[in-house]
Length: 130
Image (cartoon, rainbow, N blue to C red):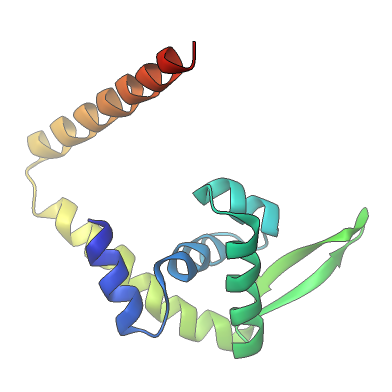
């Protein structure tokens, strides 16, 4: 799965981390670098690099937060909405197509098993920390 996302990201001139960051920026009217870091569990430097990349392309702008000038909100520019929107829409369309290729029963089974796996994996990790 990750290989498919990485290959697509490369085909549009991005790396996988940039694609992940871009998907969050496109999904929200505004976000912060902290939000991007936490949503994908990415290192701060990776998020900074992606944000800087998109700033240089003119796809995003950053504005001071009124209540905390140390933090900035990230917004898509008009150019960013067009360019990034096309990239992210293609990914979402592929995900939706893949899901629609499954029967309703298969979709429910996939989601139930995925939730079960995530829960079991999380529990196993917690158990190892004890």
